[in-house]
Image (cartoon, rainbow, N blue to C red; front, side):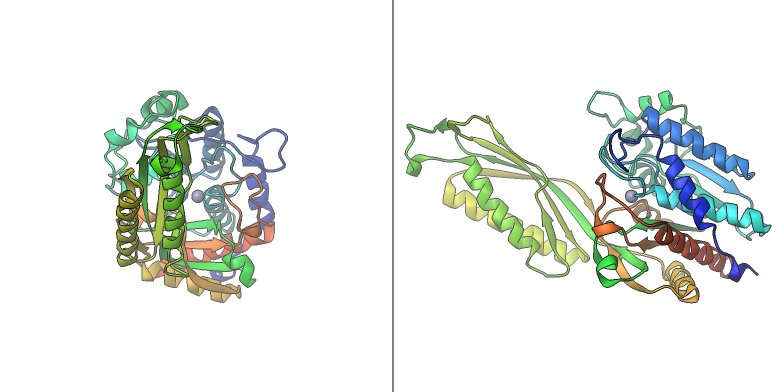
Length: 415
Ligand SMILES: [Zn+2]
């Protein structure tokens, strides 16, 4: 009976460990550097393709190198149920962020293959190109093109810090395909991912049923004052960009604390120029990341940022320019997919809660064009985008079992 079917936890764990040989950071226990379309990424892609072909799947690439490994279903007219995530990593990342979602998809198909079960829908396991955005901005670019958020030419033209375009890196990797990324049917998209935060672990829970993703807005901020001599310029006559930026940083922190449990604010980059010990900086550049589950909340935070900037400009005689660089509206996932995930979790007897994702994922974009849902498992100390990122084999196994049973349930009950 397919309701009793379980994935092979040891095989999934072996795959996770085996895939980590491609891009492992020497001298670290689990650290990974597998930037998108690097030699290491191309190597893990070849490994993944071979593993999929081993169990009779048909593998194709689109013009952004998105890998789709397909297992046919019994009803030819149905669009595929996709299980997708990403195999690329941050420069000092771990071996589970994204990778778990792809390799759990492979494990689901291996399990069906061994049991001789054929689903009604085709199943496609997807490796979305450049999810991380670490080598080429923006993040989640191929799922974005798939969903019509970015144009194909825009994505192919993005440049890394060495001046290489994504299109050139793709050609070099050998994974440039012929088909239009946006021209691909999808019945549903399931993504299993590590939480990348501490909530599940803190609450001692095994599974997160992810109802959606909070909204994100990014800004570049430049504070301009006047560079001056540290020894000759009285304090009252200074227009110190760093002092102003520091006041702004405190204000931005307060914006993040303004709606506890919902609002978050981060300054990830903060650079003072010209950068000399005995010169008061005339310019500071910083980045701002605002997050909230609701558009109204994001609007309030953005208005507060603008008001704080106006106040500081008036008080301190500096000019502060804010440029929006990216925004991702809040996402609510599909009730049907979430029902399948929640039902599977309950039948499997795993402790769980519903939650929002704090991070962006490919599912944010697939949700625009196909019913989508996500499954979270806890990760150690909530750490991710870090070489210390870690999960246990049992956590991976539970997540993949939920994925398997949720996909089987969705396959039975949806056209
Ligand atoms: Zn990820």
